[in-house]
Image (cartoon, rainbow, N blue to C red; front, side, top):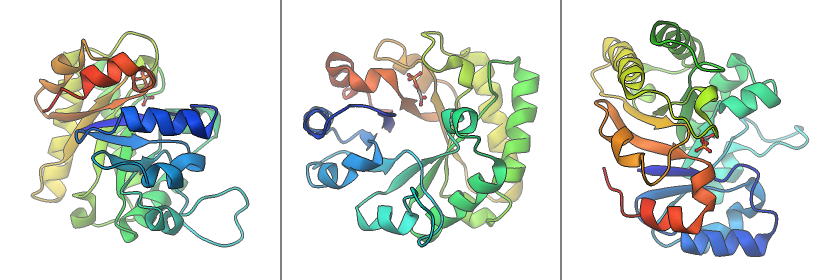
Length: 233
Ligand code: PGA
C-alpha cells in the first residue's frame, strides 16, 4: 500500500476533487487536509481514505477534529505523530499516545510515524525508534498494537530528494519487528517514508521488513501518481 500525504495542499476544493479523481487507485490511501475529507469520501471508489492527524476527544477543544468525526466521514487511517507535527506544532509523546488509543477505539488504523529529527546513523536511529515505541504505545495492549501501521520516516529524508539508506532502513525495521514480536506474535506492518518517487519506490519496497510507503511531494504530481499506481508490493 502507498499512503499519499497531501500535507497542506491543494488550495481549493476544486483542485482537491480533481487530484482525488486522478489518484483513485486501489493501492493508494489518500490523506487530504481535513477540509476536503467529506467531499473526497464521496468521490473515491478504489482508494482508501485517511487523515493527517486526529484528536482524541469531542467537546470543548477549539480547532480540533475528533476520531469520532473522522470515522463518521469514512476515514479508515490516520497519520499520527508526523515529524512536521512534532517540529512545527510541538506535538509530544503524551498526545501521540492518546491519539493512537482514540483511533483504535474508532477502528481507525493509526499510521504511526517514527524516526529521528534530522538524519542520524543506524544505531542512534534504532535507539530513538525504540524509545518512541515504548512511550507512544504505553496506553495500548499488544493486541491493539498489532493493528498499527508503523512508518519509519526520519525528518531529514523528507522533501530532500535524498531518501535514507536501504541498509539503515532495514536495520530500523528489524528493530521494530524484534520489539513487536517480543510483545505479541504478530508481525508488524512497517512502511518507509522520505523522498519516495516512482523511480525509487521499487527499491524501498524490496527492503526486507518494508511493506508500504508514505509519499508526500510526489503525491501532488499527476505523472508520478500514474506511475506509482502501477506499483504493487
Ligand atoms: P516526501 O514527504 O515524500 O515529500 O519526502 C513524505 C512525508 O512527509 O510523509
